[in-house]
Amino acid sequence: MTLHLTPTSAGRGALAGASIAFLLVGAGSVAGATSAGDGIAAAQSDDSARATANCGDSVSGSPYIPVDSWIYPAVWRLYSLGFLDHVYLGMRPWTRASLSHMLEDTEAKIEDAAEGPLTDQARKLYAALTRELDRDSEAACVGHGGEVRVESTYTAARGMSGTPLRDSFHLGSTIVNDYGRPYENGFNNDSGASGYATAGRFTLYLRGEFQGAPSVAGYSSALTQALAGVDATQDPVTKLAFANQATIPAGPIGTATQGRFLEAYLSTQVLNHVISFGKQDEWLGPAEGASMAYSNNAENIYAFHINRIEPLYIPLLSRLTGPFRYEFLAGPLRGHTLMPNSLWANNPSSQPNVISPGDPWVHVEKVSFRPTGNLEFGFERTAIFGGEGHSPVTIHTFLKSFFSLSAPDSSAKDSRGDPGARFGAFDFSYRLPLVRNWLTLYCDSEVHDDVSPIDAPRRSSWRPGLYLSHVPGIPELDMRVEAASTDPPVSSSNGGRFMYWETIERQGYTNQGQLFGDWIGREDKGGQAWITYHLSGNEWLQVSMRSQKAAKDFIEIPAVPVTSSTPGIPAVEYGTTLDDFSVQAVKRIRKDFEIGGSFTLEHWKAPIYLPGSQTVTATTIQLTWFPERKAGF
Image 1 (cartoon, rainbow, N blue to C red):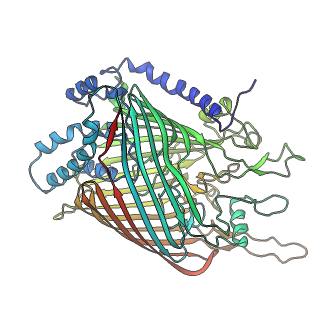
Image 2 (cartoon, rainbow, N blue to C red; image 1 turned 180 degrees about the vertical axis):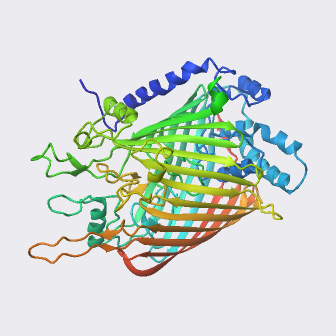
Image 3 (cartoon, helix red, strand yellow; image 1 turned 90 degrees about the vertical axis):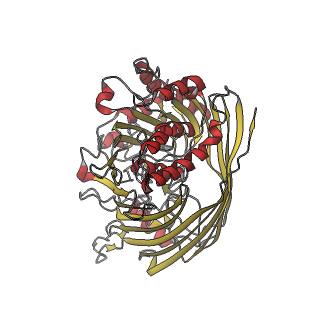
């Protein structure tokens, strides 16, 4: 009998059980070989080990820090200044407890350092981070009682002029890395709150908001048909686009007034693993501007997660690799339209059973190593498999996609035995010799239908970056630059049908219509740059630029061949270009109240959509309160 898993609680539980067995049994086999009993890296201090034993950190629940928090760039800078070593930049989010452990040696490093402007900068960053974590440490050793805390309440008002883009799968997006929130010309508002409850090893975290955006005309029927042609999401007989494709914002689009959980999960901590289920953030790369494998560019998915939150040290192996962390998640994607293949019934041996399946599942695995305090590198794998009408989500199909490393033949790909769309990623970060406390080089990369970008560099997409932790003479100023390309110089990268796209899963690497990888898109090149002046550890002024250019062969109207009755029409190539300039200011009025403001000026060209150059402005004001209120139970 075959066990079929659908996106129900029973189905998620069965897949969760298989995943726990696969990961935790393997981890448990080496746990006894580690020095502190559960594999804390040898580099951690004796005081840290004693604190863990006394306070029960390995079994106490702790919530994750949202990936859009100010904490991550602050830790990045503290690391690049040389005052923090035990950090995994390519695996975010971190729990509040794991961040506290990362910072255990920082105070001593600051006290031992010579006085000067860089030490002053590190001291400000450390003070801001420890002040944020102080409310946790107050109850660190009081047993396993519970508490409820309101983390933040906020409201963000955004006024936009012009015609903004919101189509990361094709033309681009005016606002990126924003959880797939709606926005349009006019007044937009997102107001919400976040908080959590902990009891022993368990944590319940909620972050919800009300979202409002104006109505918009959306894409015309002609543009919808053209983009469906690009994606190959048309009925093979009628040649018309399938209806209700979340990846194509066809008009008219009504006013958005909705409530949404950005994050909502229940977790438990076991042997330095956090096991959780629900919606939660992921950012699986070291870059600031995007993550090739997984980011917050789209709405989070409901998924089962296993995350090794503390470094694991294995004798002999870790002499080479250093301590390492790993993570696994699996869950259903949403916004993928079931597109039946009307030709399959008469030709099942030569036709796929669907054009694109409805709501397939995704599973993601990553491991990151830190052989030295200056070097981190990681490997990641994503598989999109199953889906309504194509292949059932079962233990068998999950394991097939999990272990399959070779490309299937067309008969397997078109059948229920399809292992799915597989992507592999590699990233690293390295504090450069001679300029250790100045320059950090890093890179994120991903490849489709190959094991890793390392063994197929020409077929891979890349996001390299360079971070300057401070400018000579102006220690408060840092600079960062990143490039990005998903258009490798190979013949398969053509027409947008390679990166983030698949022959069967044609709505690709998306959730609710938006890419959950890098916003740069499917066949684009571009980059970003930031200059930031730090007023304190959690206050700043920033100027940034962003550029994106789609290949002409990606956004095009295909040629109409010559027939006996028509002369034929040549292909029309369009491409797109997007450039924006932004300024941002963030200031704390008190330690618990923050005012943030930003202004963005954008110019874009997408001739297939609107003629000429379009100008968009976005002005945002956000007010955030961080109440220091909690209740015990």
